[in-house]
Structures are given as structure tokens and as C-alpha cells.
Length: 83
Image 1 (cartoon, one colour):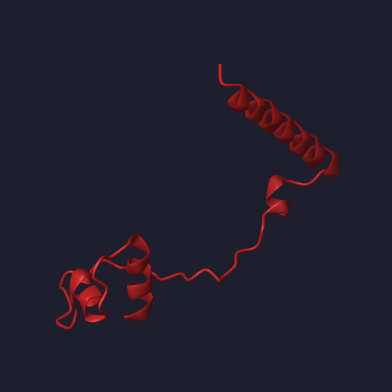
Image 2 (cartoon, rainbow, N blue to C red):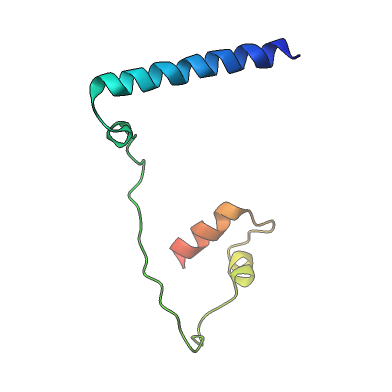
């Protein structure tokens, strides 16, 4: 019953049809049009360990050391890359 939502659905369906037609006409796969990543991907191999290193600190303590009072998900990645 929502006219705005209905208009959006029609426009979105039309956009998808046009993109598929353009893709089929080009003869390339969808992956060929993927955007490049803004930053290089960092790959870190993880291996199971039977013991915890003595110098390892808890994530919460590491955040407190750099004075982050209210941690957010992005702080976890930042802290991991810094420490």
C-alpha cells in the first residue's frame, strides 16, 4: 500500500534488469566489474596454540591502555593491528 516503497521496488527491479542485460551484452562475468579494494588485504595465518604466551594481555586491558573507554567493533581491529 506504500506508494513510495512500490515506486522504489519498480525502479530497483528495472535497474537490476538493465544491469543483467548490460552484463550479458558485454560477455564478461560479474567479477570483471568488481571495484578494487581501498586498502590491501592483510592475511595473518592463525595456528592453534596449546599454551598462552606470558606477555599476552586481555583485549579489554589493551583498550584501557590506549584510553578507549567505550570500545566499538572497529577498535578491536585497530588494536590488533597496533599490538
